[in-house]
Image 1: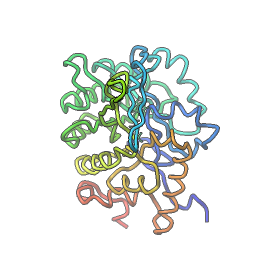
Image 2 (image 1 turned 135 degrees about the horizontal axis):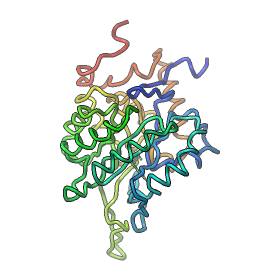
Image 3 (image 1 turned 45 degrees about the vertical axis):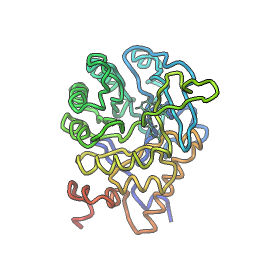
Image 4 (image 1 turned 180 degrees about the horizontal axis):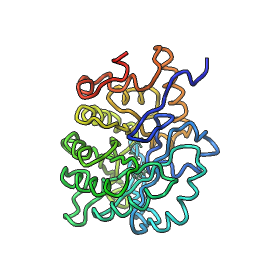
Length: 320
Ligand SMILES: Cc1cc2nc3c(=O)[nH]c(=O)nc-3n(C[C@H](O)[C@H](O)[C@H](O)COP(=O)(O)O)c2cc1C
């Protein structure tokens, strides 16, 4: 019985993914290093490292710290800036046998709009994700993703620059993520990525110094999975656009929890550092799970553990 007897394809706005698995921004480069170990045509897509208007050297080292069931990172958005990126990097993405999604970061609304427009104009880029977990220099460094008004403004400005699918990546570092999600949807997002890293820190008890050069960082990996899952569950009841659930997914069972909570697709980040074959194993495992239950499509299980989701959405299968 062939692998393809079940349909794992999903839709994010006008973007069709053959597999519902996206490699998380900043955790997969552009796929080049993974290509010798992984069949890139079976991973769904890659969300590229966030790019900014100006080049950035990133934060002082150390930038990574292991923590129980996870890791802290404080890379500081190291990237060559949009000019160099468009000139040297983006053309090389044309050969990849999977969907390539650009990621935009910025420190002003104008930054986001500018970088989004230039990146989205490239044919190698199928969709754009907005990483709005950055401080806004115009409002005392307030994080875009932590303020409903700023979220609406930055998403609206980016939306005006492109017709390509726009995914807005939300931060878990808020009290009411559903309220932020509604603002992003109303401002024109086609899909939401839920969630980015959770703020945290670690201290070296020998030196009495913070272990990250930047003092604070973002926690990822299994340690944040329950937090991410609840965020997906809450957002899925609040919006009707698709969700890319992410945070600590390492196994088929982890992935299934996110689909059942209301995610249409999943992101896999930190797990790739442990074993680059995890995404393919998850794809195989999802297909096997559906076959065992005589289901035909991954879309049939989305939101099935979330009563609020059922009220907000219509299942494709319900009309049969
Ligand atoms: C080293 C590292 C770098 C990251 N860089 C970015 C980034 O540039 N832009 C972004 O939106 N998210 C970035 N993330 C967040 C991941 O894409 C992902 O949302 C988060 O780590 C949670 O998923 P995970 O537990 O599967 O890694 C980064 C995460 C890590 C670990």
